[in-house]
Image 1: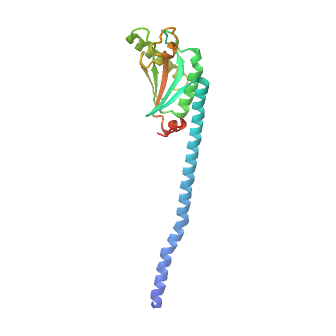
Image 2 (image 1 turned 120 degrees about the vertical axis):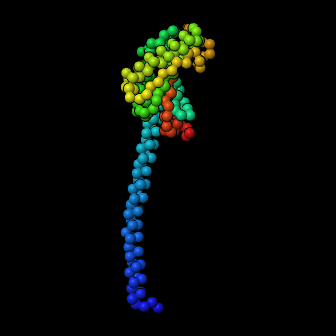
Length: 201
């Protein structure tokens, strides 16, 4: 049996230890609930963004015949932006595609580097084709800048007659126009780009 004074001291000490715990428990529960709600809201916002991106990528495919491929560190957009023989002029037919691509890039990838890759058909020398493909890439880059992509890095490169879509097709031969093209690579497109394409890298 504890002496009465000792028993009172023990009860007082127990009350002192218990009260903060009781007071802390609702606060911790509130913090955990708040954190969970924030995480849920962030997940929902990301899901909505991925769905919107998926819809925009699908519209590029269906409206313009774009082929979009997830790369190791980005996305490749193969749009049918093509050129006349021995010409680097961006056609009027390409304008709607470029406008749509610029809108998607600006909305979802505002800080990503975009590389415009130019190509040529195999007519002419390798040196000439490389210079021509570079001019094509630069002209398309200028169009993208005019369409609002002024604040993000835009690079250009000319690959000449390499990576032909229709090997050997040149001039007015079937498939030659597809060899005279530009494609776009968005670097550091992030996880959401792959998820929108149905891949989880």
